[in-house]
Image 1: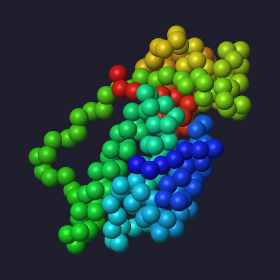
Image 2: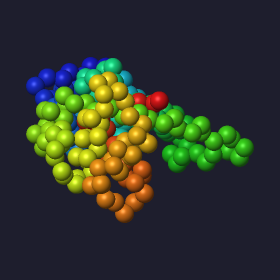
Image 3: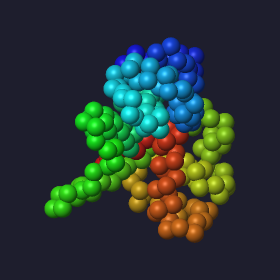
Length: 216
């Protein structure tokens, strides 16, 4: 895959996109992909080894190209700890794209197939364990302050960062452990179920490149 990261940018097929290897870098990268023309999307897809088809919508191509480039971003950030949901979503998007191209080649409709009767449901997702990318947090002045255990902020992201920062070196925390520690601060207020809210913010921090989530 001919993708080059240099000076805060990513270049593929002669197209240069912002891709700083820092928190939120992958979000800005995807936003930039959405602004590409169809010709640029096709060129980048070809460079990435992604098959295209005239019947593909721009939206479908944006999702696939964006997924490939975001995955490359995470690989460059930390190849040993790519978030589990990133790997899963990347694989799922590749399969969906391949199926869509096959359907278009056959001249069939591009709607998703309904699950056949009697087909077994997917296995339940394995629980995740979380770890803070402390070095990445320290690089972001807006969130670095939450590493201070004396910080009394009531911001949900900040409280979760404090909790993860308090884990022993190299130790990961389950959702239950994070939720219990968050509750113990007495500062986390939400109208939702506590575990549900904590899970949502952990996923958000993972997407921002500040937290690693791996299957237990």
